[in-house]
Length: 95
Image (cartoon, rainbow, N blue to C red; front, side, top):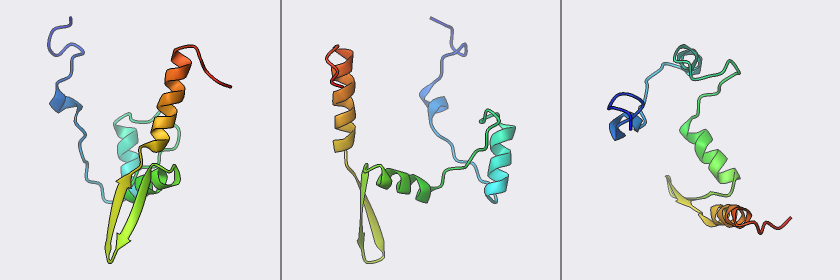
């Protein structure tokens, strides 16, 4: 087992951080400066784009009540994926 600090990360080190940038252009430059890209174009995620992706994938249902939006996760599609993966791992994959 490696000594502390040699490839072992504490829970605090693994938690997400938020960084403040003034606009998308600065966010993209920030990504490149930190080495978070392989040179291909990067598009910083926004809260709206993440919810939109989850909605289009059928993983979240959004309800509006007045000026409020409520998001509910639908685990059903993920259950189907897990079931297929489990079946393939057992050698009984259907094609």
